Image 1: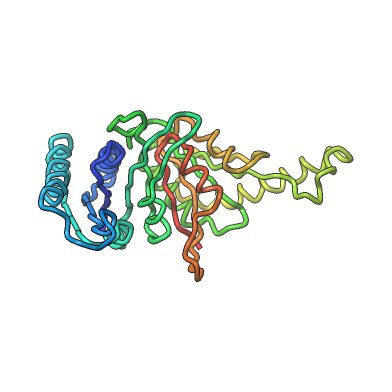
Image 2: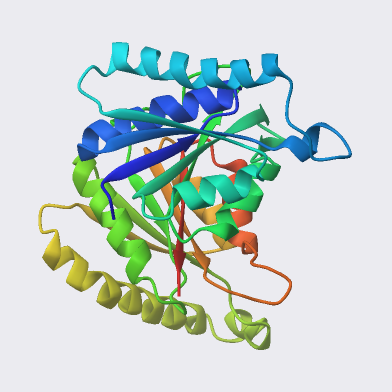
Length: 292
């Protein structure tokens, strides 16, 4: 890692909110902040052709003006800019973040019911990179993130006990420790279909399974609690759809952390349904961490 945070800018309020969140995070980490803007020529017409001069100037101004604004608010930050033309934005962002600690992108709100739009660039970029990607919300045209990076809310981590959670736990513990805030670890589960009628026949079945999962989760967390003895950890094993349980715990969170399995299928990488739901409906910033 290069102790650098990369943020993608597109001129929107969501992009501005992402830059603000990334600047706060860079201060917490004493990291360099890189502002990136990619112009995809092909999206402006049926043929790949250079953009007109006013558009190129606009892109350059976007980077320089954002840098100047952030320096006024975060005078000690080391901020660099990078603009690229003629390449797909997702490819540029993934390449720029290849050795970065974080890639930060914006997503705009549609309201409490509809949720958020991650956007085609964000959705395409996340499977392209193994770097953790943080999605920052901007609702109702606001240009600031819902929660600042130094907010006192907890870090909320959603885990699947059937998966390798080491990268997720390392990321979430470091973020909570950096903020001196609690870490809430959530595992949502449901009885397998074969046990659908078991609770009615034997009420102890559900409790026995829940106790077993709680023991597994505690065993999983034990080495991390030893590594971060000052960290307050709230472990929750709850019945219900995992995405809903994570979103419920994430109300008021400083950061929500979810995973994405690293896959290289012939038809391209994908984002799992739980992570997809959290990405589109959580109001706090969401970190998507790739893992095995």
